[in-house]
Image (tube, rainbow, N blue to C red; front, top):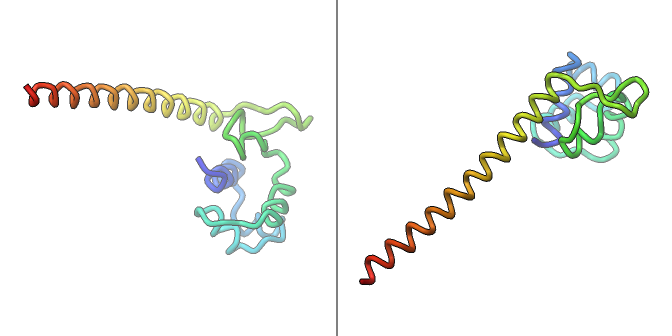
Length: 120
């Protein structure tokens, strides 16, 4: 999942509208909207947004690891349903990737066997 989608997911969880985030961060609503829909954003604008979203875990935002929200202490994260869902989806993606690799290897073996039979 991209940073853009994670920011949008955070805003949904916190029930923050683009207009509210714009007012709080000083970043234009169109810039935030474009970013949340997959567009680029400057590091300066992202920094302004992150200053407002101070409970957002940067590990989760940038790497998709751990819980979305930090605790009040700012170091420990609070696991939530979204985090558990993200971890389950990541595990599902890993399993699918492994299965795709096995299927690809089997397909290659079948192609080689068919070539061998044709060459006889």
